[in-house]
Length: 98
Image 1 (cartoon, rainbow, N blue to C red):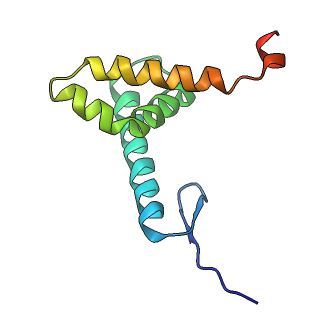
Image 2 (cartoon, one colour):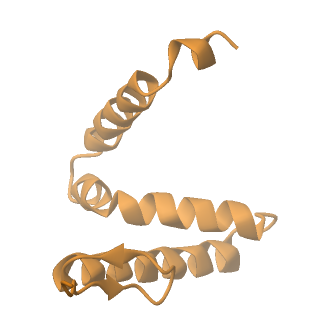
């Protein structure tokens, strides 16, 4: 019987086969939680669910967001177009007809 080491993220229970990926995921979730708290403090009327979704989306795209803040705001739109194109490729023909 083989033993396989895995790392589990305490925040969401995600499992990883190496420590580096687990720590990176944990840092992303921590950033998302902090962004969520910032949104909830400064934007009135936003639901907890919506602020969590926004926080997670921004945390997942932190590299693109950092480039945009450093003078390349067009990167946000380019990345969004690529993300949308990737998502539409994953739609099955049956689901697209609904």
